[in-house]
Image 1 (cartoon, rainbow, N blue to C red):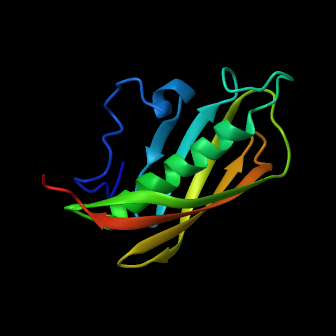
Image 2 (image 1 turned 90 degrees about the horizontal axis):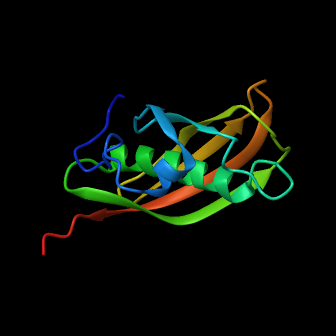
Length: 138
């Protein structure tokens, strides 16, 4: 991983977090771009298709890690708005998401997250805005 700030969540820590339950793997973490994968297996809705909520959780995870890297030491990134458009479904394999910075400000960071299936077809386009706040010391 690259550019992870000290305030970035620790991707090596496993404590029953959603990222662990969904099987999300972070491949690259940086303020400009963050990339991760998630298996379709175990993240499906009753019809056997990748669950839209799991896809949205992947998108928010990637954007949040990127925003935390941008926030820097002593600051945190908290999601304030997420939208996702689902273009097609997946039934198997590993999906890959890439969060790309749209806006990197002092108080907010916005990312476009594109999720692709194993054949590199776009499954979802999401946008996440995070507010950047000072870490609490109390």
